[in-house]
Image 1 (spheres, helix red, strand yellow):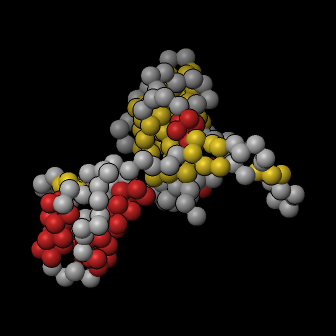
Image 2 (image 1 turned 180 degrees about the horizontal axis):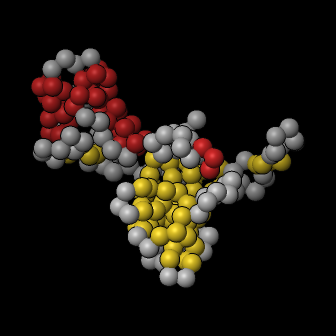
Length: 199
């Protein structure tokens, strides 16, 4: 457990800023972002504070990397959230009295997980808008109907339903139905298991 009692007020502010970025984004801020946040004009001024935090054992840094700041004391991120109840639009709230929690690590299951972010609103018909995260899992095999991220002929990237159609792959839109894509030249990047949206 690291101690922050021996920090100056500014060092403590910068440490909390770095910690908040790592906890919320998964990676630390750049020197420029720290400078902008605390109105420190010189990168050397930021580096002095970071060196002090490193010397006091709160952070570690890797040279020559823009986002190289790590916390010495790895914080445990909360993954379970209380389920308070359920409701439909305009209906009565059904409160959950069992103190049930949903652990999002359990929802992920085993396997290699990663995210893709929607760059625009081209998937709005699939109820995915710009900035949404597509949560994916790497699969060795795919079954008919799996929703996948597919790269066709090393060029076009699509979010489609996967089907094995004879000796070809058939990719169909999720909704509404449109003309399917048939191909033998496809790279399936992963199966989409969820969509995450910050509102």
